[in-house]
Image (cartoon, rainbow, N blue to C red):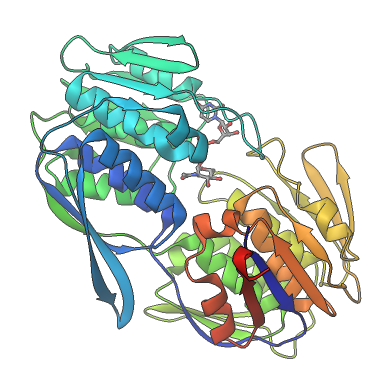
Length: 431
Ligand code: UD1
């Protein structure tokens, strides 16, 4: 398995191009199942999760083409998806096991073909992550759902029916699945307490461009009037706010300056405010965010994760790492997932001063120095927190289980190297 080796202590300086958002691209790919025509997605990130979703769709019968492309002068990929003849309505265990977001095929397949068999995703490193809200909502829309042998068997007698849904939790995944089911249902669906994450806005936007009728985008009440048919479209994936936030922390933690090209400040209001409150200079330009911590002393700040527009859980680990280098104490409270401090024991091994209280909060006290160590994390964002710690630690840090990072950070070493980091990937066959 590949590893990443970092020699800490470099002040990062320069520009990083922010890729298309993984968490937007995954449901967008599945939205292509709702039409027989071609859906083209530009500004796609090259990530292992995208490859895994593409493999699942190919198995369902989707024909996929990939082209080299440019967005604002940066090389990216464009993918086209066409599902003219569906060959399977099953998302098997091997696909769902590798990537939970495989469950995004459920809404589209059920809406268009009246049937889907989906391996039930289990819990994962950060929590139990059930699908009860997805399933209860689809049942209210007329689906018959049975769970047996580890699979969800979902069927509808003809089209799904619109329904009035009030989500008990503003779940991102459930909101996306219901949106994709409701665009082709009979009649009107209303989703109250819908999640408002920007990736949902991106999904609603493509569905409307395909002929859907969704109102209330960006608010917690979405109204969807079902249509008979959807058609193809071309859509540019929004910039990845979590990647942007992660590199913003890379600038802050090394007391450097990075311009995040293509990042969208309106998707990062809370994290940018936290940086400002800590003493980091943050400037917003028309197509970038400049994060400048040069020569600054940072002060600890409390953060609490919340659904959008609150502080994102996917940036909690990275900001916790930043707090380790700030003056004073910071309290980090996690309210979305029940097991999201798995990075802390590894950070302690690098000399951090962190006390975790139960599952929900951690007190981080700033330390004068961290020291490099071999470390590994159990999930994607926690792995990036270890990279951040490695960037400021004295000596060498080796981050193991790099496959987590490859799921969500495009060209990670290349991007960090371009702003001055001393970082290399050790391929498993180099050992
Ligand atoms: C998505 C993101 C993930 C992010 C999370 C929260 C993708 C592919 N993943 O995950 O990176 O951390 O949003 O912003 O976009 N829940 C239930 N029952 C359900 C559904 C959810 O209890 O049926 C709970 C979850 O266990 C969790 C909370 O609701 O505690 C929020 O989960 P949700 O918003 O659904 O997150 P995901 O869509 O899984």
